[in-house]
Image (cartoon, rainbow, N blue to C red; front, side, top):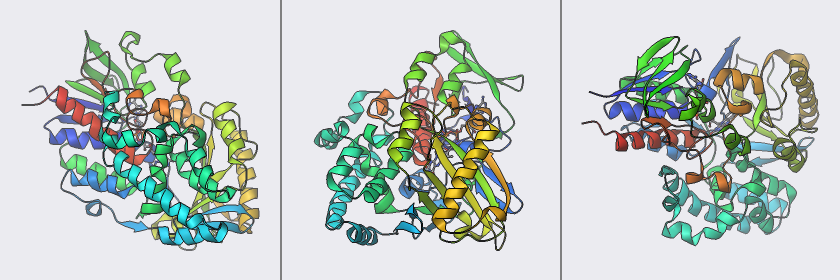
Length: 489
Ligand SMILES: Cc1cc2nc3c(=O)[nH]c(=O)nc-3n(C[C@H](O)[C@H](O)[C@H](O)COP(=O)(O)OP(=O)(O)OC[C@H]3O[C@@H](n4cnc5c(N)ncnc54)[C@H](O)[C@@H]3O)c2cc1C
């Protein structure tokens, strides 16, 4: 039977695809270059502290439920979830922050206390966002991006204006207070582009934020990876770690297998969940569908400078997710998208999983993750990392009114060079290719190779886009295309 299928990489998209394809009867092997699975969602353990290296926000729980339900399972069969309250705090000045709580009612009260009349506007705005969520996340994102016609439905025709308008304009039309505006623009960061370049239709992210809420899987996002690994292995998937794929071998117009650690693995189908650009470099140039110029012209989601810090005391005035928006995001965004350079005054995000999860740090200690979004491809040196650590620590101490630097037991950093080295990431991007209007759905790099008949791609550079929920969906879409074009008897 021609059912041998090799998958490059073990991120969310690859693990999802592997389970669907194993269930269809494929003999699936995952080849992962690193020593653990999970890709960008790997875990760092040190001195009793546990950090998620990449994603920390569990949004859109319905997408995870739908994934596991496809296998007659539930997320709770693999990990437990807690809804965070507050979902997050946003600092604007010293001890001056806004708490986003765990229900729309409470968030409306907060908005009203800051801008009179904003509660009713927010209810309407989120109602519209929910409508878009139902159209996008329950339907459109599950279409494979093969043709523009996929986007033409009675629902989207009613919403045409929202594809031409931007998040920035629609938010500013309704809300005047700069703090509220920046909170409503924040979810767009997950899509990888500026609010001014993101279609207003994407306000479904605001429904994910305010309407559904923020969850924490016990032991961190890595517990989701572990659950997906268990599911895949139970379905018969073989996982080979420490197995970097060096080449995808093609004969005529067919992939015939892959090379890993100098060994040839014959394959009837090849699927790559590694970064799309890198995956194509595993092919001879004549088999690549996209040129270097193509990638050069695309808007990539930011890279990031991250610090994983072990503190020997519990920190004050912070919650599980804490954002520091005390500087102008427009100026920082210019340094990411328009004139790539290290931001003079960076916005940053901090996560303290030990605030809600006992397993994240030893008793009496705090685990801290700090993230600064950066332009992909920017020069990354040990000196500049140190310089930015000092910048954000000084700001952090001032804004939260406490001394913490003396309490640091250790810190690890991760930046552009590590994204390239660890994940073969194009220019060290952290979360793929942005969802702008011209990089949406059928306009994104294709799931099915245009040049090699039995080669497929999945992950955050293809359809539907960046983020954990879209990566799960991407794996499902790639598997469906493979099943459609190469049905097993
Ligand atoms: C710092 C950070 C924070 C984020 N925060 C969030 C968040 O809070 N919420 C959210 O939803 N999303 C978040 N994201 C985005 C989310 O993590 C990603 O969209 C998702 O994990 C991508 O999954 P993937 O399957 O596309 O790719 P990846 O996770 O990148 O997996 C690709 C895999 O391919 C492997 N690989 C590469 N080359 C080879 C090769 N030649 N041979 C074998 N293996 C290879 C890599 O090692 C990697 O394991 C964040 C990402 C980062 C980096």
